[in-house]
Length: 79
Image (cartoon, rainbow, N blue to C red; front, side, top):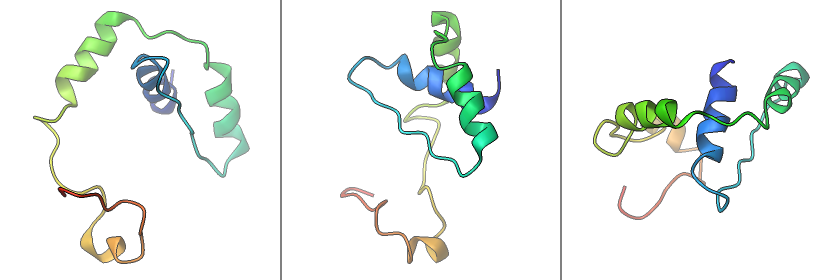
């Protein structure tokens, strides 16, 4: 299990209404993600991740101000 596979499993655990669109320019990474696509993350691991990464533990913008100038898809109201 690599971090990308774990991230995708956590995302899929959010519910059937969530659709992941993993991006990569590396065929090996795509193959790794597909290889574990059907892995179901145990509830205990989901809870541990949720406790570490949530609205109370993560703050700030995704990108630095210098790069944000060239990205127009990551600005939302309230940021």
